Image (cartoon, rainbow, N blue to C red; front, side, top):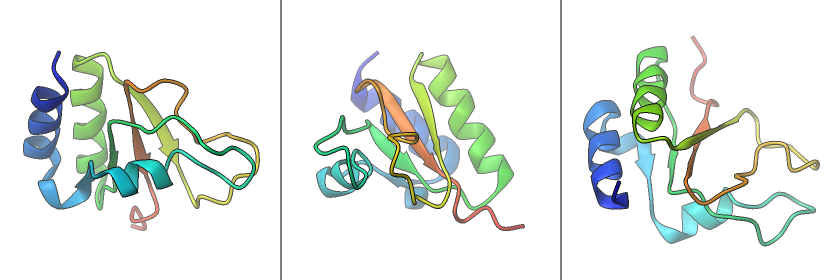
Length: 97
């Protein structure tokens, strides 16, 4: 699996507007207040619907990419940080319906 192939498929499945793979975003989601620097994920997905979240999980599973769920982002325990670089963070803050 190439990173580019995975990201292309992920963006096609959920919409490019909710997938962030730039360095600054990846670095931000790799840290919490006590754990810096962490391991940046391949991408961050901010789904706005259950369907988008489900599609992100399906694509990640198909490519054997780890899934790291993130809620409010108020962790001090390393609970929502990637453990390996072959992962995506699914930030659920926009799932409010």
